[in-house]
Length: 251
Ligand code: 13P
Image 1 (spheres, rainbow, N blue to C red):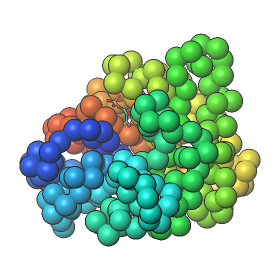
Image 2: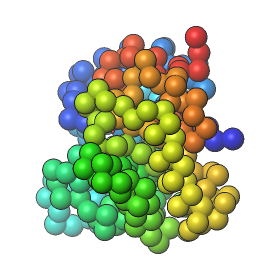
Image 3: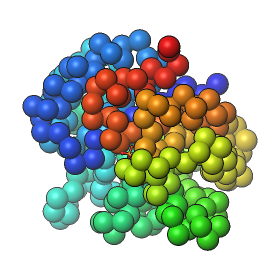
């Protein structure tokens, strides 16, 4: 049995004061969660979130990481820097990084290797855009994105990864993949992992859905056998909404 994992991706939202207020409000609301609870936040909020989440079941994540140990990479953060701030998880390859900041499958792979090497837990994002879905390339594309990103990982390292399947057309649009569409594509990703690393790794790896997931649609998505959690944008910015997603298994 795979343990579900619900992660917030705050994107470029929340000052440290706002972050502290949000996590303080969230803490009691998610304390009985059956799933792993993570908030991936802007680096300026690490300290505030760490402090506010102290002693709770809320885990701290970052939204990106550089592949180098250190050096002349203005504006970037290394895996060791994240670890030193108490970061446990890191999102890599989000479609917004691919779309606006020149992220490629190759650079995603470099980041994944560096993060895993440093002991960070990776949330790897893959997903197709509208044109790619309409052209019938979804399966081939998510398979390719996944396999390139994992290149160089051992079976054990791959098994411990979290993958987020985020169809780009469903992000921030209010459009969600249907429960069946999400389940089917996540099944394709799981099979790709199983082909490369064996059935055990395919069974172990946790794969989330992301894209307009919210308190209303979470139950249906989470009822699908392949879907092990969610990566939540907009609905993670308000404690009541995010806690309803986290507590999807409760009435
Ligand atoms: P929304 O939940 O706002 O659609 O964002 C999804 C996302 O991109 C999470 O990484």
